[in-house]
Image (cartoon, rainbow, N blue to C red; front, top):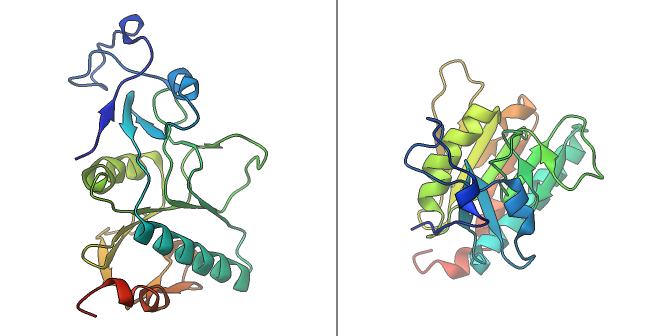
Length: 210
């Protein structure tokens, strides 16, 4: 279950807006930056969510995936940059949401010297952990789609699946792939495909039934 935290002095921020149903007090970006450096959280609609250290398999998938995305972008001269977490994203460009996607792809001009990215990345990847499943699959799916993220990948190490949400598709339907699939990057318009079997090859020793 996701760990929900509260910080700051909520008594100074009474919210009666429908945007915060069931939440009487909310935190904001000032509270986010006031937290100790070693406390990693996300702020979503005024609520802090704890982000504990991920499992090693999470980090292995993330590291390998970053390499494949970077290779693909370079090979096809795509004007995109690929970043790993932790990287602050002020998703809604307001004072109540700051997320840290596991991987993000930006294909537009931005300030590389800034302490955070403002707005919706073009592509976001989240790798599920037991403590983040519901947040990544439900809450962040809603947030990313409504903020303007073009493509969202949800990687599930438990079931060895990758679910791709390409929100710009006219009749949008999520597509699910296994860990041995060739997965097209939809925003590349056919130029880039991730060979997930290359990642799976390095994971076989961790799965007893492979």
